[in-house]
Length: 180
Image 1 (cartoon, rainbow, N blue to C red):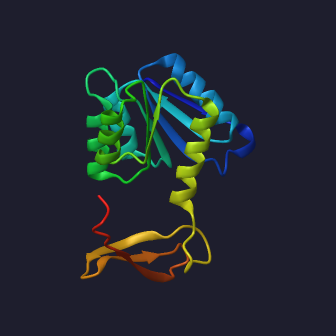
Image 2: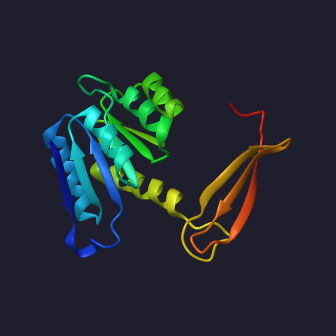
């Protein structure tokens, strides 16, 4: 199994779990060291198939995904992940032209960073994504809410939320036809 894990020891219990799927072993080491030093538990794989298997069989807080993978490209990996998981995905790739970025975001990536990149920017983007996905909602006293159900309503998308302590809440996401 071609999977490596790096974790900073000072934050083992509270570390966000990040999976890096990239065929460049040296880049994986660099990203693992940098994010590991920032307090994250980082696991890497160089295989698109194994990356999908890991995302769908384990809990990760973030996936960092390359587009140009051998065998199955990162766009197809993202499609397969999105078919079964809402785990946040940050695309990290040499394919940084507008069309590729737009396609990645449209398929379901949460963010897109082109190579070469500044490791500090990668860490900042990872922190921003993790903040958005773990932020408590206003109705919750502890922890992040999870989506219990979605419904199509006249004025928008109805969202029923439940906090870790069991409190329920709801939101309506208004439709804005002026945006694409």
